[in-house]
Amino acid sequence: MQLLPDQELHVAIIMDGNGRWAVERGLPRTAGHMAGVNAVRTVVEAAARRDVAMLTLYAFSSDNWKRPRTEVNSIMQLLVSRLPAESKKLSREGIRLSVIGRRDRFPDAVLQAILNAEALTRDGDALHLRLALDYSSRAALVCASQHLNGDVRHNLEAVQHALARAYHTETLVPDVDLLVRTGGEQRLSDFLLWECAYAELFFTPVRWPDFDDIALDEALTEFGSRQRRYGRVVEVA
Image (cartoon, rainbow, N blue to C red; front, top):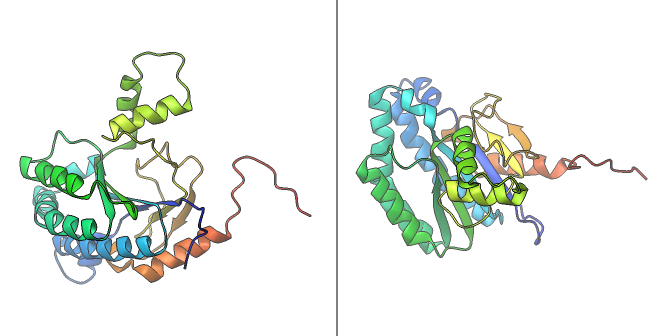
């Protein structure tokens, strides 16, 4: 499906269900994360073909550090091993990669892989892919408030600029149009709370490793049927 030519759509996805996908198949949870990486590639390519302007994926929350050390180490190793090759593909396809979230708690190898991927893809204009890593929306808002420097004259745009600094970017933080959560749960889990003020929410029982272009089309079709009023009353003829 194609979006309207003037529609700058921001889709955000909470990629949930990797571990349960693996357990249901008698596999270790780490196998679910590996399968989840393949799903990322499928969905990114599908989003680019559907003229999505920005795609933000919740890959690793700040609370995920509480998971078993072996699982966390596996995720960190996946980032180190897959980011270089994936960023080369993204660069060839004109897709820009940015990482939002804290950067001070990653192993050096992970941080370097992130910096290299961002540098390699910075000129991409076909799609802006953002990975939320060590991300907490509440923490980002606290960080943004510190960037406001006590200026009592700040407004919504000033907060957006401050959030951009918290996200290591110079561009304003765009609102989310469509928030998708896979895996069957129905909560935001501290993800993009500011940006999702008027987002349309779509929950699916599909585990993330099974989420593909068809599942993305289902979410986009449902989004297209929603009436977005932003607090206004729409008169019916």
